Length: 264
Length: 251
Image (cartoon, rainbow over all chains, first blue to last red; front, side, top):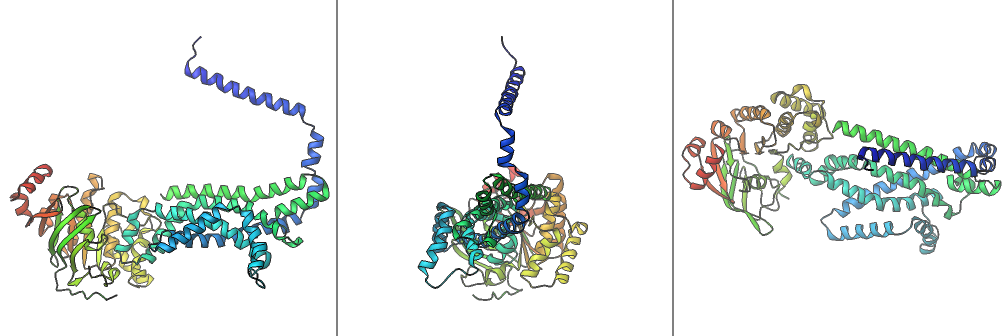
């Protein structure tokens, strides 16, 4: 029996719903809800985690991320302009830097900064202690990624913009600062925010530095609490805290994109 | 870096034996050309004839391969000259308008005044408003370019160039990207400018404008100037066969 295309699409959709329903029923039948709740959502443990999870852990995660992102953004802009330089050695240096730090795991960068710097420069240390080291480590990694994003953004600004600015007598650097870079940042706002979300998660790598209690960020805090309670609830709690940061960020980006669309 | 010594009594633009290559492709094959102070010179020709390249060489948006260009007596092809200084004396209007989309109309007109001419905020805004009024868009200073029609955008672009108080204006096919019904407003603004005595070099396909407003008409084809003269003369009695062929197609 031949089915019309519309009929066939309808049957296929019904089948998909049916599969979903079966999975759901199986899950309900198999799951031991009491145990699950104890392991993942023990409200007593959750309550005990407050207020430290917010006042210390969430605060530190935000602090590390914002500092690393800011450092990375400045570094990324410098690297992007170097990549676009007419002076060869600047281009090569920037390319080498970007390829290296994009290719190496962020964890390796953290370890190198934590143990390599004291060995390589005896008697010296990165200013700012833990906070300074996290800033540099996240900045190096984030900067390498953001450099490529910023470069793409600058190149996405139509050539006529630079020409119009130059024809008004602006020197190249002034035209870059006042005309091209502001437009580039509008274009790359979404990918930059994506990078911010990635750095939020990378900030958990700070544990390799060996932290005191007051320096705990979300992941470290969650793991320590988990060891004390024999429950996965602390991890679920910090996961929710991460979402507290990242979901609003996504919403903000969507708003910004919508507004940029209206302004044309 | 030398300060260009611009002399207001020298010819506005003088081009001597200008050659321009893009790779192996020679797009300008020895151009000799001048624009006198206060004149309106229209450059016409088929696409690919090199007319836009010639215009862009005049304010060095394209670097000539060889030859000399003088702006008001100062040689701008001299590698030591302060090009930005020369450019700030030459207004340029593009086919694609090239307004700054992230800035309001008013800011489009004031930013270079402030950054290049070092004018204050109030003075630059006053100059900008005067020029917006001149192009008939005094009420749109808070709009963003995307909210304007093509014709309005091009008039803002003209006002932006005028706000630098240039000695001359270059127009690169200023009406070619416009819907037909919007061309008239832009040409009207250009006509007013010409009647005020502005020195203008206009690459255009608008033969009516060239005939009515132009002091000189230049016909280019294949990288050379084929014919030049009074517009009515060239349009009515083209001497060269290539000019005749081109005009028979566009008139």
